[in-house]
Image 1 (cartoon, helix red, strand yellow):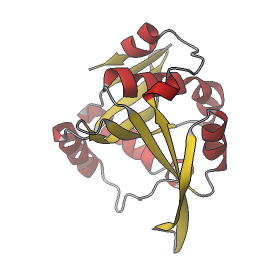
Image 2 (cartoon, rainbow, N blue to C red):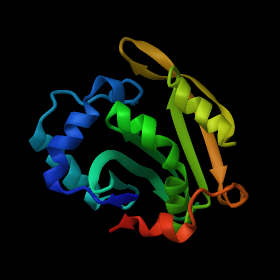
Image 3 (tube, rainbow, N blue to C red):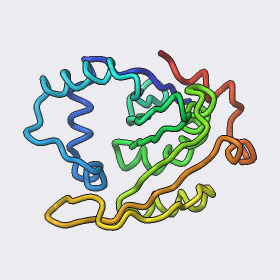
Length: 183
């Protein structure tokens, strides 16, 4: 089963390796310039101080397999964004389809949000297709929104309200999804 734990400074090298993997970084809005483990540790320390950001190492059967973050956490308007990835191709094929209820339940019932807003760069067709299958509302396209690899890219925006999520079928009981998050 899954466990979501807060990253530690000891995770810096692993996170840096994952985050600089061309498969993972190709659809990220930013790239890490001059990757360095000490800078990654400094980033981890900085993220722990932010009130608008929360992140987790995704573990499956006791093994780190990926990363999940919630950003732009707004307690007044009760909305945030999320981002996640599974590091290895085999794990992506086996596990990625099971993460959604954990991500959504923590957003709405762990963080107390009312809306989750996500943005995906063009070309990330599998994830955009999954958002549509999951009935996330497609809000629109931000044209030429990200400049990366020498050109501008469109960004697709999706949102889900807590009330909409409550009508979705759930693969796991909420107590299972929420107790998977530690810290």
